[in-house]
Length: 79
Image (cartoon, rainbow, N blue to C red; front, side, top):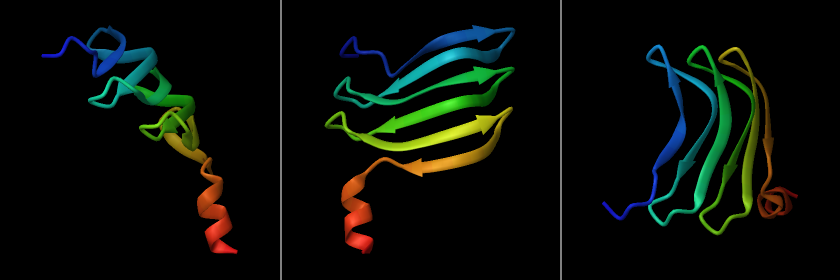
């Protein structure tokens, strides 16, 4: 192992709870978001390996309620 964490966060009673962060092999942050009773809850943000924002998702007790593309280059290509 290179010593870099692939994931950080709390496990309570075998369930993910609170803020979790997942990382690329390089150590760069890949995604950050919170769990509530093992379900995604609240805002989750995904990043490209260069650190730029990729996607923002909002969850309500495990159900995706909103998804927003944070990559403006893709928006320009669609036009």
